[in-house]
Image: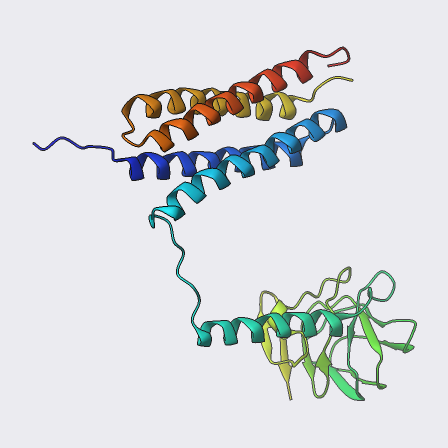
Amino acid sequence: MPQMVMRDRDLAEDLLFSEKALSERYNWTTLECQNLQLRNTIEDLEHDTHLTARSIYEYLNQRGWYRPRMADQQTVSWFNQAISSIQNDVRQVGGAGVGAGAAWGTGQQGTWQTTVGQTGYDYGQQTGFAGQAGGQQVTGQAGGQMGGQVGGQAVFSQGIYAQQATGGGVQLPQWAYGQNIDYQGGNTEYRRT
Amino acid sequence: MQLTQTETWWVEECAKAEALMVKKCQMIQQVAQDPQLQQICRNLEQTHRRHIDTIASVTRRPGF
């Protein structure tokens, strides 16, 4: 049976992986530290492991043993679009929600109808909406925010989901921001009519 | 100021990992063919030894 030989490249790669693992361990430790003095020390050590990892990386890179492939133009283009999209999403999310219930904004006039909702609609102070779930329609004004608990299904006849509900029990996924809603998931269904 | 249970566990994990790195660097110095890699490992060994001393030092300070 042929004997396994660790070449210099294998040794250096193993060393780099070990440094990365050590760095991750320091990172967790930093996050778990209550004692500030200890935390600062651990952070310094973590930074040190970044430097040692870099020296191994450069050794491998100089020899052509560790050369990450550059992204092609199409990938860069997709990437730039993705970053812009994320940036726009965050801009649309804006500030915090209204009151205890959080908010999802419209940016345009809209009508919302609950179809299977249960209780506790409160559409927030800024817009002054108030209503009960269970099949009622609520009409909103441009730029308003709606917040509150949603226990069942809600149908958004118009409106762009712009803000995440943070305290009211409605949390749509990231992709829904800035989109006309047509979403079904968990115990709650959102469907654009 | 006392350390929490979580802190002691994580810091010990770090110290053990540092000790393994020292041993690994020693081993590579012996088996590597490339003098540059040997030299890198010598430096790394010293760095990781220093890290262990730092951890020991900070946790032995009054208040810990």
